[in-house]
Amino acid sequence: MKNCKITSFVFLFILISLGLGITDNDLYAQTKKNRARINADYVKVIGGESYLNIKASARIDKKTVEVSHIDLQILQELNDEEIQIGKTTTNASGISKFIIEDFANLQPDSLGVYNLIISFDGNDSFKKASRDVSFRNADIEAKWIVKDSVNYVSAKLIDTQLDSALAEIPLTVRVDRLFRPLKIGEDFYDTDNDGEIQVPIENGIPGIDGNLKLEVVLSESDDYGTVIAQLTAPIGTVIVDESTYDQRTMWSPRGKTPIFLLALTYSFIFIVWGIFIYLFINLVRIIKS
Image (cartoon, rainbow, N blue to C red; front, side, top):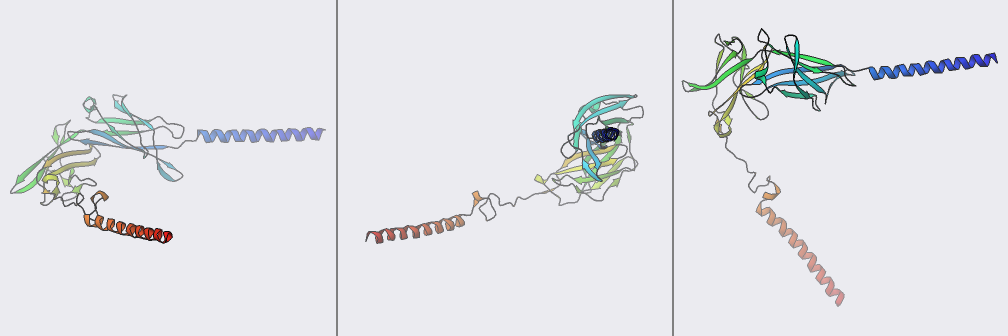
């Protein structure tokens, strides 16, 4: 009897231990979260939008994956105070473009630096995370000029807070294209002591109606982010439309099938059906006879 009691007690103890072990594992599984990473770049288009390019990702099972459909807060840090300026949500690729609607209402600190914070409060799968984005405000004054019968893009880079030109800063000149911009000249041109560059534009670059959409770009600067100035110049080669899409050719859509091909096809159809009808008529005559 005593052995039975001891055996029952041991069995009960094992069950309780297993139960506690399962509960602890379940709780651990529920509380274990992955760490989210947030990257952000500031982009300013002169005369257009100022925005943040945001990318959320995580390292799971030694693989980098996108963190999609998470809510982010955009805050401005000023005088040790955080002020919310908007919210955004990442798409299926973990990317979000947050447009700064009221940039003029943002306040820089005493050094002329804008300090923004992208904040994620966390969810059931990921821990909370944040990313600081700091930048100064810069402008690019770009124009098209002609000197000695050569077309040039002239640009000047200015720190708007200090109202001073920025020297020895690399700028890129390119032509805007549908898929990928076309760089002009060298990979970049350093501004001179007056913050200026002059880049010759070669002849023969095609453009719609002879117009080229040119861009002068300060790319991914540690101090100013990405700044893009755009201008249109009538210095391109007019694109000649050689498309035969609306003509009756072999590679046109079926609504524009060549006439000879239609006539040939329908002729074969009429001939085949004519033979069937002729054979059917003769078969009827044979049956009657």
